[in-house]
Image 1 (cartoon, one colour):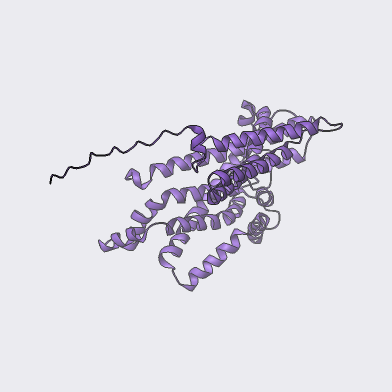
Image 2 (cartoon, one colour):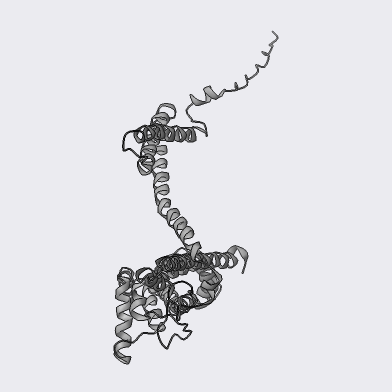
Length: 369
């Protein structure tokens, strides 16, 4: 008896789903969160617009933003729960909360930047960058002496702090594991991280007053006060970066007979250089805007001073403080100089961070340098 095979059956192709069908298949389209956000903003705008039309009513921007965020969180959770299920709804809710927290954190930063730029530009001029406040009363003058003082004092503090911080971090990670000395250093670094800046200034002043008498004011005193604040930040950041270097790299180098100190210099430090430079820049940004310790140690002056070891020295934070607090006539000139100095300080920190990024990228392990 002949056996005949059945003709092959064709597998039906998957039907093409429309947009409405895709919404009901368990996943929201990519535009859905943005659409829900727009609807939430519109609802909040309508609500606060109606409230502002009432007698003595006004549009509350903060309240509008809070209500819009709450409406969005509720809507995205409900819609996602219906379409995608409970787990995805919780994920979208947490994502919305994190995004809202990020937006809240950005508000003061953006507001500060805009305020500093808008108010600081009015005080910027060629004279501001080329002259000091010597014999200047009222309008005119500049902050060249403060800019130079800031760079000199911060640079000296960095020269003191960076080697101490890096070598301390190397000892803690590479040599001090489990030792009591390392535990004591870690404890002291933690304590130093939380000390107020005014205490660092008092320490530097008391140290120099022992040898030079009361009333001493020097730029190097300010550098030492800032270094007290910088060292724990450098130690902590460098320590964490060194711990991120895989132990396999150390073991491979040691297995080839390379001494430990050379392994640290040629393998460990180049691998962690990006994070180390970033930590150093964070420590500089931490201290470059300090005012209280510099008022005590470096004092203030209206004249140029290029010598850290002789006489008082002005810095941009102190210049901003004195211009704003000791306003003369016209007051607008003093306020403009204060805002201009604040803007220049922000630009200096920004420039330092850009330079740090370039250096870290240049010496990254992927570059082979």
